[in-house]
Amino acid sequence: MTVKKNKLKLYGFNNLTKTLSFNIYDICYADTEEARRHYIEYIDEEYNAQRLTEILKQVASIIGANILNIASQDYDPQGASVTILISEEEMKESDADVVCHLDKSHLTVHTYPESHPQKGVTTFRADIDVSTCGRISPLNALNFLLDSFDSDIVTLDYRVRGFTRDLTGKKLFIDHRINSIQNYIAPKTRNRYNMVDVNVYQEHIFHTKMILNEFDLNNYLFNTTADALTEKDRRLIRQQLRQEMIEIFNGRNMPSIR
Image 1 (cartoon, helix red, strand yellow):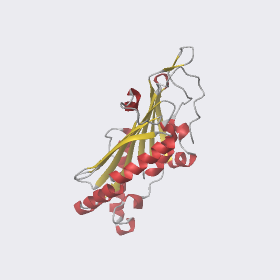
Image 2 (spheres, rainbow, N blue to C red):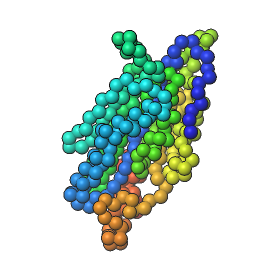
Image 3 (cartoon, one colour):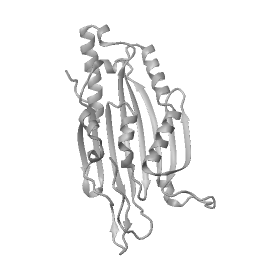
Image 4 (cartoon, one colour):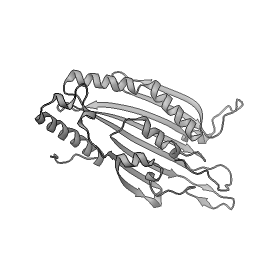
């Protein structure tokens, strides 16, 4: 699903800034310190700076942006960051200075692997920002990014800032129709998740939270299977994982679930 191209007649450059932000979470259970270390190593390799760079380069291609600069870094002991500066128009060799609107057009991703000190629950988080200025829209890359990560929970923020002007000088604070980020999410993805919206329409701020509908314990066990566990252990681990997921989804610590 793509955003329709802007048909508005504008005076000068489109100064609207559109930012799409993701918090993507992958939850896992690793029962020993060694298993947790191996999980972190696996995540660190699966989402290293090189792979994240390729994902963001594909995002730039999807939204029709030109890449100006790429900075990437793998961290010790774990984690990675990538920042890509983009523009709507191609830069000419004669352009000695980057025009001011370019510093508002960027793609970034940062990863944060971590684990619970006692309960064996490990969480991988990726923070992604796609910020554009002009006609190009970050919403066009929404489904590609959702498909690029194996996500149990996703929080999405979309905001349109600033204003542009039409030919009469009238201010335009948004140049496209939207009442929910869900409008731009593919049906197959919407069917997999339970979603909740918290929107501030008059401020052009849209927030959507997503959590998987189905819970299969085998999808959350690292280096083991549910069949290898006792019924008591399966029940306890399932409770711990669901507790972690519900708290992340709601953004606060909550009473123990059963």
